[in-house]
Image (cartoon, rainbow, N blue to C red; front, side):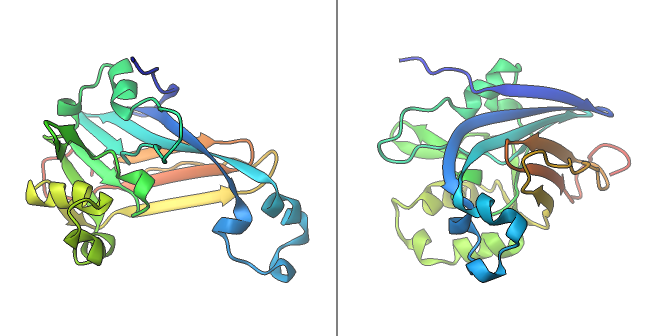
Amino acid sequence: MSQSIPPTRSLSLGAATITIINVGDMTEFLKDWIILPESDRPADYARVFEQPMHVPIQCVHIALNGRSILVDAGKFDPPGAPVRPRLTDGLAAIGVNPEDITDVVVTHAHWDHYNATTALSDGEYAPQFPKARHFFGKADCESILNGEAMREAGSMENQTLGVLNRAGLLARSRVILIWTSAFESSPRRAKPRVIRCCACAQADTRSSAWAICTTIRSKSNGPSGW
């Protein structure tokens, strides 16, 4: 059965074309994410902690000076959940094939930010973006690669970071993430800004405003001014 194309929206930022791809949606409570005693919660935000929060799972593609950069590569497929559109379908909708991706930046080590970096092929997991360097925060990367999960052949960590590491596609690098949020019904938007080039995106939900700005540091021949 064919899958639908994930919702996407694109914007221009200087020389970059940025596309936000939604690959799934979670409904969560802020109180489960931020462990804060009720007595310490600001009175103005008490209601926000108790009401369900719509959380889209989004990946961002940046086309910039000949590079095809993917910020986060995730999917949402918990047991029993309906089949979701795939990240690769969203990329195809903007004319990007997996082989076109030059860089994958994983902003942090939550499962939904890197569990689509690999895919099953002939019964084995293989890199989803075989020509891309995969940038992962050094501390997060080493913690996972040296962790118990890597000793389990069927673990998500082994089937993703393990595969990328064995393929020589994993770069332990400094990934700078700026993430601001405002939990308001009509949030004041945080202004995205580019730090020495690279990846910048903004995505709003009904209850929060997120601004993400990521920088790739490498010795490769990136665009001038990096």
